[in-house]
Length: 116
View 1 (spheres, rainbow, N blue to C red):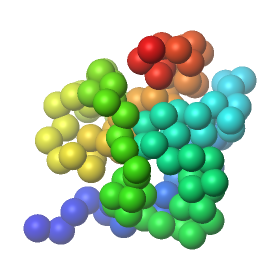
View 2 (view 1 turned 120 degrees about the horizontal axis):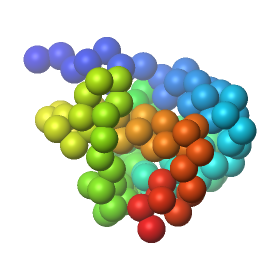
View 3 (view 1 turned 45 degrees about the vertical axis):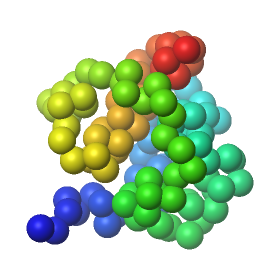
View 4 (view 1 turned 180 degrees about the vertical axis):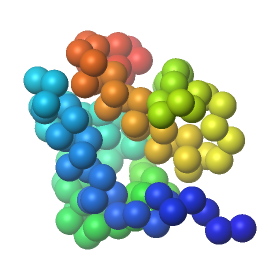
């Protein structure tokens, strides 16, 4: 069974939307990058490399050094879907990232976003 079409979408095509959403609400690109590094385990150079190479979401998460152990604490609703109930592991990761960026844009403190 083929995966969802977002799996094949270049991460680099969505990344500016994450940054734009955050910056429109007074947050920064650096905070978005911090969230991405926390969630995936990429360092900044590796993150920038993935964006530059325009890898798809599936590869972006497959190559992630280590999903943060506290990522399971990311709960709530994104686009009408409860994050913790998403069955497909890749789609759950994408929804977790969406949720973290939403929390950033809503003004939540970074310590709370990063589940510290």
